[in-house]
Image 1 (cartoon, helix red, strand yellow):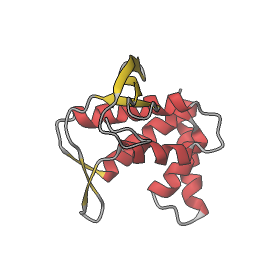
Image 2 (cartoon, rainbow, N blue to C red):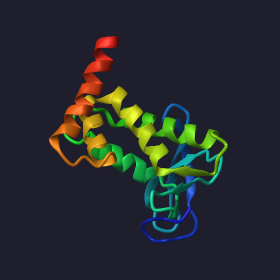
Image 3 (cartoon, rainbow, N blue to C red):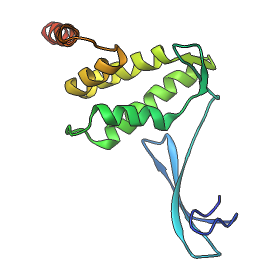
Length: 154
């Protein structure tokens, strides 16, 4: 692993432990050249995923981009970062275990919507407004109606 401080190609692992409910390994490293200490995370990747955009363009799947979009939706809400990490790990696991190497951006959006609905209603509405491309206030009313309808059924 390359040292982020001096760019040396060699580093030593000082400590390893499970992280994120056992879905990744946290490694504490030290660089023998400069003495810098840093942490890396190692995750199991079942397959390389490709995202098929609405335009038909294909791009490599980016877990961090998925996390960032959810973080934007929950901004200034009382949501623990660990809860988002678990949701993202669950979505990635679903996508990787589906057996498909190509996944549509719509499918990813639906999975994010499901996860956000369980985490925070406001974040769900925020994400829905971008994902569904809301154009008028009625669009917000429709989503709020969906939320109210589901809450009354429970």
